[in-house]
Image (cartoon, rainbow, N blue to C red; front, side, top):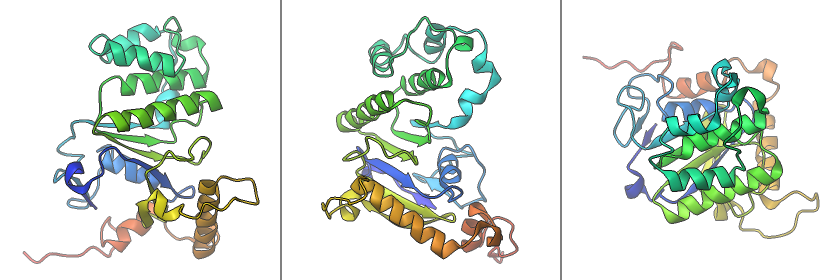
Length: 259
């Protein structure tokens, strides 16, 4: 997988929604793009660089595991945490995020809820300006209002700066009109990709009460289930399917290069 320069490919100021059933490979893809997981040599590059070995400037990944870390459940002050990640260097962004996420800087991390802890994670991860933001189910702990405010802030960010967001989620509340692009993953491969308008062009109202986006995603997941069949009959997970298709990953189907 190769992702070229964002400016050359016109992906700046975009908000891409990554959609797929549980186990489709969304988390694996985001972690590979962020350089948090090793891929076979040559399997993935971002702007010509291997994100694992070379590192990437301006790429931020935020996932679910942070709030589960025992360290962030100890008696630490939120103000100190924000200062430790550059809050004093970006006071305007810090204060804006504190307001958008409704954070009390007097909170102590051992005494807050998981949802409040998640807000602190978001603020810490976003204080420093980013070019590419990779979000993996990061709003799962937020209430409806907090999620709406956060998504609105992300939209304003991508409209004001040359940056892009890739957001994997199953929660479609407040997403009407939010994504500029959609990516549909199934068993480690990308089935559909393109501008959201390409998939949401029919403005007819849904009889189920779901949003137009919700109906689209529901249809995709139903099709995925039909093509995949019962999970008990799937011999390999998403990563195995993806690497096998490319002749990578130690499944006995690697493409050999004669030296």
